[in-house]
Image (cartoon, rainbow, N blue to C red):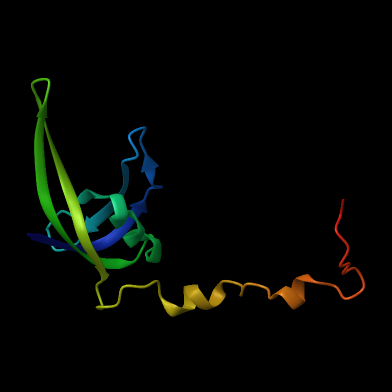
Length: 122
């Protein structure tokens, strides 16, 4: 188990492959080094939704494992994240972001009393 702290630089969309496998990549810029590093992490399968409550520019702590494999004589390394939390200990987008999103309209908001017809349209 490893841990990295930094600022989210990029969150990619979820990728779905023909086999049904899904993954999502994101980049975190570390700040504790003399020279900041951009580290690319990935989350797979049901962990893809972990990134839904985060946004670029947010400080996070990422817990991850290092995965390596060989394919046709070449070697690859992946940083596989399994836990992501805001650096302040929360796991959600800041409240100001959530409050700015419009509320979902109710059925009464969508229905105009004059144009409501109970008849079947065919």
